[in-house]
Amino acid sequence: MKQKILTLLLLSITIASNAQKLENCSECSSIKYSESNIVTNELFELKLLRNEIFARHNFPFKNERLEEYFFNYDWYKPDYKNPVTQVNLNAIEQFNVALFKRKEEEIKRNRELLLTELGKLKVAIKENDTSFISDFTNGIIKNDNKSLLKKIKSILELIDIENINWHKGQAKYEILTDNGFSISSQGIYIKGNSISIISTDPMTHSDLMKNDDAFEYPSDYYSEFENLSGVKITFKNGKLIVVSLIFVG
Image (cartoon, rainbow, N blue to C red; front, side, top):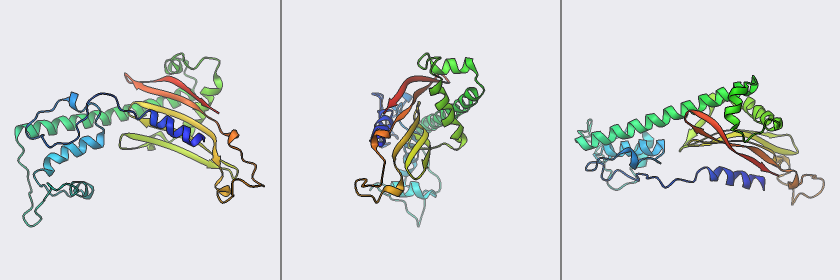
């Protein structure tokens, strides 16, 4: 049950805004796009848009993933007997390539800053930096709620922040512990500038029980044991700020 709730919480931070997204580059040779057209495009989408400009000139990619991706389109027909070695882009295409590249670099820098701030938060809570913690808690975590800060601290201590990895605009670092009775999890989940630091203890029964039929005796695991808690955070103006608490159980 709590796994479903965790999934819903993570989905809640993936809802796109009403801002525009550029779906393809079919008109990138004739239309100069602006940042307002790519506000919600993810890094991987921008990379594909940028390379689509070259693909539409039938450029043969050395990157197998890009080549495989564009082979899904009928218009991509690279000539391997007489391969295009250099693409002469028109002025509009050059403009769009530069636009997408700038946005890609901006997203990369934002990710680096976000992870840097998570590292600072980890140190601040460990060293009880009251000024940093006060800005972070944003009045939502009360001073007397030390147990929640302690839980956040315990989760961050387990996380290798430098090893958090991204895929299609999302990132995570989750640790699962199976003690033979139940499985618990602690982790950080990121979508754009929204972050959830969550502890689920326990989240489901141990793998040892997976062959049990409807938890027949002697299993003593009950879903009523399950609970989930943590915080939802936003990364805004270079700072991490708590926006809400998470309690399910």
